[in-house]
Image 1 (cartoon, rainbow, N blue to C red):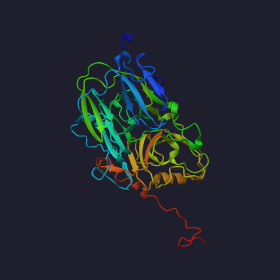
Image 2 (tube, helix red, strand yellow):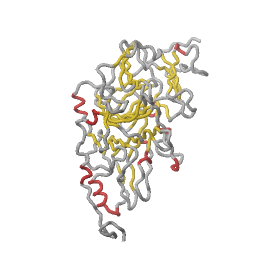
Image 3 (tube, rainbow, N blue to C red):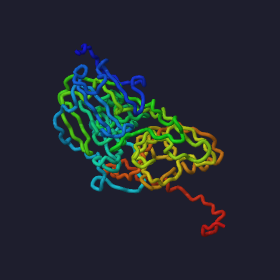
Image 4 (tube, rainbow, N blue to C red):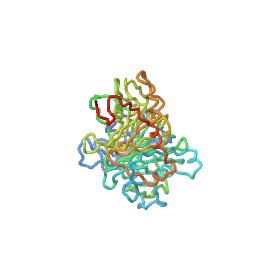
Length: 464
């Protein structure tokens, strides 16, 4: 049946209210920007409404178990296959890594910390968009073998004009630290502010605009799997990140001729470009459970000890990418939000630790409870597998000085996070040789002195 022609008005407004999104995690959603544009009763009719093309995007294999299967159907003005052949991008982006080996990365058990890149210097530099400003810090595994992860950072001062980015290697979890991101995806638009995160699943095309000017942040990438909510175990049915607080964009599209439009595709860690004469954001309607989404970290419900001892950081996991081994994550995303500390007779800051997991930390705003100095918003640290780490000297001495009489206290004006992986990371050359490397990081612990009294033991340390 011939569809009635409608006058469609397209705007560049990005949603600013939660009601402008769909809500839920792992749901099967549906959205249409023109009433009646979503086919009913089947996925791929002979003739789609309004002359649209039906196109499926699969995030898992066809035969994955139903509870893990992820896919969406997109109904678009032109199919995404309508482009010229991909060519290697020139000049080559030499700061991205997805195949971590001795030829492109290094390993060290030393505690590492990086200072933040000053946004002012970015503003004065040549124009750099999100793709050009993305660089790898560390990672492990292989995008070709579909197992592993990478941690990147980005600094940009320019919106992506007449181009879109597609990551064929894995899922991106983006943590903006400075400046909002206006992200246009094939499913619709997302406004992501510092204090929020956004996940762009493997294969989706997206573009990043910078409404506040120069921007910086963090990105984790996972190969061969997808993020999911952690099991809550004895916590029960509620707490941590609530599914209802995850937001998915509503359908939005643009039509018209766009000669010379460029799609940049990351494939095997390398960038390729293809030209086409239309915007990839021409999806009029869609349905499915494979979608980009965002989450406001201020809505996280943290848990903590209420009597004694310090809880393990896993208690504040927002999202996890599990491995086949129960309880072991390829990558966890953990946050350290404002919260009350009430434990009695307890060293309340993070304890000293050697971990079989590797921990990359970033700071979105404020300070971090374990580091009195040096760990700044926009900076980062890496404590790899079995490398000792913990509170610095100033934090330890100040905590001990407060004694056993410390009452309840609330940590405020802080939002730190951690990417934690069971794999041992290799460090990229650009990160290892970066002028932002804090070569004096180790000194934050050198002031820790012995408080051993020796009472109750002989000179050889034997009990008496």
